[in-house]
Image (cartoon, rainbow, N blue to C red):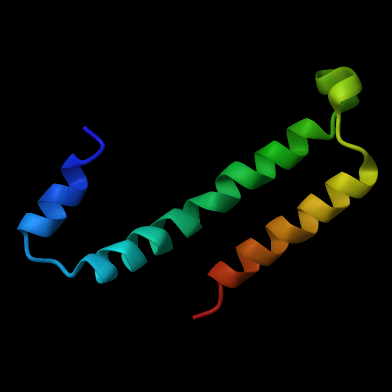
Length: 75
């Protein structure tokens, strides 16, 4: 099942390198929608208990998420 899109792409005659680049572009636009909720939820002590992120981890993750999101805005 996971091989089906790759086979369809290959049978359609698309260059595999181009298909890989475009798939990564599409995936990069979805990354902020996963990172931001993850950071917001894992820093909450009431939700995560003793497993909650420390402030330095939350700040570092926020900076990385902002960089990833910002890179998507560069034309």
